[in-house]
Length: 255
Ligand SMILES: Nc1ncnc2c1ncn2[C@@H]1O[C@H](COP(=O)(O)OP(=O)(O)OP(=O)(O)O)[C@@H](O)[C@H]1O
Ligand SMILES: [Mg+2]
Image (spheres, rainbow, N blue to C red):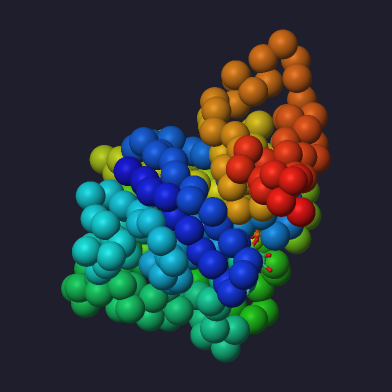
């Protein structure tokens, strides 16, 4: 459902994402981890068609992001680090606007917006101006704008950052719900980045960890934490390695 094929992004001399490959099957919820600057957001922006890779490609659903960019973008809902909200719009009009951007046919827009409002628990605030909502509700609007065109794939970049514990629990519940089939709608396939490790343990079945642009772990959570190992220990161990330990680091002799 999501396939990264040697995705690479260079910024001048910096290899922000270095030949990252993975496959995520339909209905999977995968936690995408890595320290600050590891390349998570850059990878997600490439998966969602917002940033062209320097090398490699990605396939979303059946569509290659280069060969069928429109189909690929249609198949994916994206919650960026900073959701593209218009503070002066009310929730409902904003979602209608997003639905039109995603080419949801005019006649189906009301139904699409109603469904997104309902799934994200926004019905009571549908006429409220976005700028006046609490952070948690703004985040729900961010998720609603990601699902309004009913994409099978969701890419969520730090969906619970900055929220209070109650709101975190609610947003996690919402993500878990989106990952389950309901009302004839198939389960979403989800990749989410986060720095909150208990969040991964709460909602993800698999972990992909990147460090300095490279994938260092891609494993089911149960395997990673077998024998009572804590995810925090795994994270610390894998990210403590610096570039000198990387398999293809230049030989010391060359230095
Ligand atoms: N537009 C850009 N120009 C130059 N360098 C960039 C650009 N965007 C990102 N980078 C660099 O690419 C690397 C990866 O950044 P990225 O934002 O993907 O990390 P991240 O894993 O999302 O980090 P965080 O956890 O802080 O959100 C960083 O070194 C960053 O400084
Ligand atoms: Mg980021």
